[in-house]
Image (cartoon, rainbow, N blue to C red; front, side, top):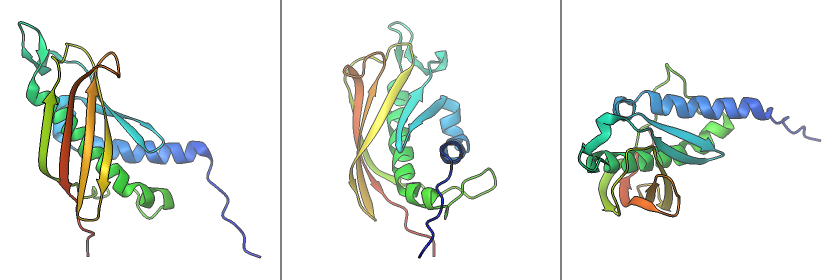
Length: 168
């Protein structure tokens, strides 16, 4: 008769996941510069771009700079892909991310096409990526950005990424 391993308390699992996500995001200077954060619900991530005056590209409208919008969507895509890639190893305990551990290698952008649907208003923005193809060498992502209303997107993008190969 085999003894099943007792599941960890839910608080311990949540703390481990949140700590790993925090390490992933906090150690990338450009994410810090833009002020992008991530909210986690299970394995689903939502990127949050908190409004800051430095993000305004056109002060007459005012509107969030198109480069900031593009960077926000790409960051959300890359972090979401990385999160999906490391999820199983985080869950089974073979990967632990902390302040001293090396970061996992990130996917490299092959191409990233942004559709600007309307001006980004001077307020917080949100983005969620959906992985449309997850392969060992190549993955595709569709990401949507919105502000006040999830059904009224201000930008969306499609990206193709070269996936990092396992370290030997």
